[in-house]
Length: 309
Image 1: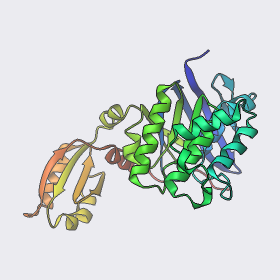
Image 2 (image 1 turned 120 degrees about the horizontal axis):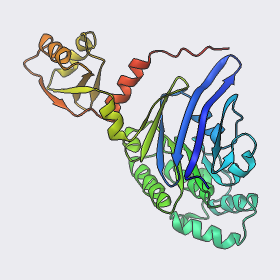
Image 3 (image 1 turned 135 degrees about the vertical axis):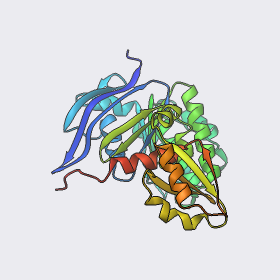
């Protein structure tokens, strides 16, 4: 068996005249956690659905868990857990009743034991008789994770799973994801949160349906060639607009109370700072963050040139 959980090449998906995904290649080893990043409409969800056999590609080929994504989709789906962004379980059933329903769908042996073990593992035992619709976002998320991992899949696909949950619930969720990965589960998760991306072994970045970059976070930052300067001070906000229009400044963005400006030419950035110098603002060079790099990548990529039907 291949050591790649996902091996797809040239994936294309068209809806009418619009190419939602245009030539995506992904080779993902088993047992890793990968982050799938990109702006809304970049093709992340469409790509995930093609990988797990829910959507037939217009062009391209590949294998997932050793099975052909075109001809053996049923085998892939049985071995994959797919958690959608929107809570997609039954709000008028209890936590336990939801898991019982899922266990029957998968025709699991020893259903009661499997459900009890899943409830215990994900800290849901004390809440198992609560109605799902009355749960907070974090507990709904935990129920959804229980439901999509109970059949012990080999691959877990998560589509923006932590949208709308509190920071503690996000941390708990990611602790659980990494616990599952240590047991051999392969995880591909789409996210908008940079701190979540930095928890991944590798990241894949899509924009306008195309794969822009992929690799380890540190390598992507290094390969961007980006330099970042950080300005702090009471009146730093007044400098953002003038700096955006200076030659060599690829982007200017706020990070907390500080202003970051980034570009690939140090001399141009230093000239821009000198030109807009303010006595109440202090500047220093800092390591570019992943967010700095992605903002720069988006500006370099430009507008969406996919045709629309």
